[in-house]
Length: 284
Image (cartoon, rainbow, N blue to C red; front, side):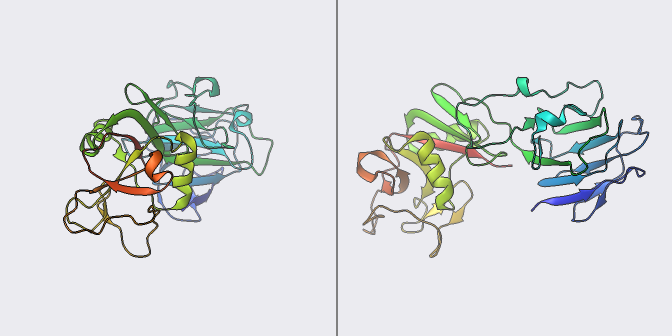
């Protein structure tokens, strides 16, 4: 859920019209001549002006996450004419620049320009008063998305602007693929809806089979998304190949993959020892 906030130019705190953790500025050393404030970003916030020159805003999210800055109904590149975003809680911290951002070979279609920090803290300082009175700054909690996670891999923010998906092209068994994702602080993918599955399949194809985290190895017939320990229940999204999964008692087909010449773009159950590619993901 998005939090919308209005910023009063004569106050040192944000006034929230939604909800969230709103507290006074954490850094007493910062001079805030006209406006400013501090906010912990739990998910996503949008702040309105009016903003003035030398206004200083502090944002922070959880320690192992980063911040993503964009502009609603605009381009953050244009906003850099009147503000700087510092990667940290120090005005001497590096200023985020579009040309220094990671460029992924795969990413979400029609994606807006977004500036990502490398830290969980950031300062926005207005160097000029914005000419657009409707200017709105959007700040999201995000994960750092690398270009790859080891040899023969490819990563990108393909589903949204804050998560990260990585294709592992070297084939592994289900247990080994699960551990490979965990080694990079990611998890083997789950599909909660058709939209995400279609995006992933369109990005990396279905010519080869890819592991997901769905398995019934703990209890035959009870399928669980192992990455979240969520039981697949009646009414949940599924995309099984016709006639799958196998309901033969004590069968050895305990792990789910999709793709390949047998299952195409559908889900199929198969032995967990099978060698296949995999999709790792991490969410904010």
